[in-house]
Image (cartoon, rainbow, N blue to C red; front, top):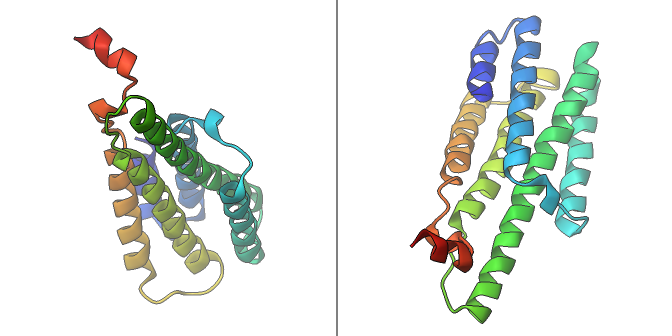
Length: 179
């Protein structure tokens, strides 16, 4: 829902005020995604370090083009979207650990594609927003709108698909309770 509000606000792309409203709406969307992907599973590992280093490089790259409130708002947004990406990656890694554990201990197959879908969607969301920010705050990018929107809509679809947890994802004890 907040992404739809952000989409509406960014439609008025030449209005600085509407851009800020869109940024705030997308920040709320990233916060909700972050919570949905279970922020408690984030650990300090190689993926987290590389992802957050990329966040710092991204912010450093767009910083010269930011002015006023956008300086801090974009900084907060970069932290949120990259933390959401780390949460999605952690959820995927936890899914693989869970899958391996279940295969070893319970013999049932586990589908991790919804978690992989969330992770791929998160990465594409970062790509989409980087294209938008680099084009807006640094230098024009050829076909930026096409790149931005195509990666954004695929990202949203992948994240939406990630809610389709299969029966095999549930704990075997929980499956027994449903029967």
